[in-house]
Length: 354
Image (cartoon, rainbow, N blue to C red; front, top):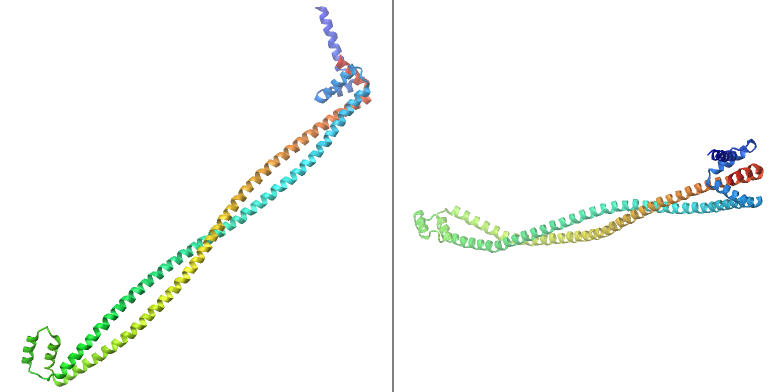
């Protein structure tokens, strides 16, 4: 038991000696112990310890460190070239995405303006077409009313052309009868005759009644009948002239209505053509806006993804650069220790081997 305690004390003393060297090598030991905390530093010290154990020349160790350092330098140079290429790629692609975004945004703005314009045009054209249809309906009603009134007026004219000559003929008969009677006839005899005639022959009744007039009154009646007859004959002529003029006016009104209808139909057809064109243009503008919206979404998502990728590249490059810089620094530190403090370093490595 006592022997085991002594052996353990010896081993512990050697370990303390390795990790806490005497004063001349304390600084070197501290530097090398610090390198142990880094994976590369520990690996280098493990490799050096193995080479020293295998009695490899110091030049081989130096060559190994130099190759390792130069390899890291070359890796860093290659990484810088890749980084430059990546940055150029990022700049070019993001520039392309920005151009796509700007173009799509402009397309959306212009398409929106066009949509508003064509929508307003369509509303105006639809209103105009509806107004033209209403005006055409009004014209059709006016024409129907004119034709109906013309037909009624013409029927009334023809009726007058039949009845008025009959009235003139009757006046001729009355005038002839009046001219043949003797005025101031016996009233009782006239009444008896009127009772006999009754209402079956109004002209004869009138003549019988007129026979009671004085000669002056009878002549006055005859004059009135003559004036009435002349007036009726003139009315027939005037009526015929008015009928001709009414027909001419009617035909002129129909011509005017037809001209207005033709103009309205032409304007309506023109508006309908423009409406069709505006509807096609509106559909195209909506599709343009829809396509531009999809392009804007695609370009925006592409840009976000590319920016994330570029940021990941930069982060990786910065992390790798920092790591290589640290590793190159570790190698240089080991090289410097081996070049300037070989004895202390050898003592530390030998203690590490033991």
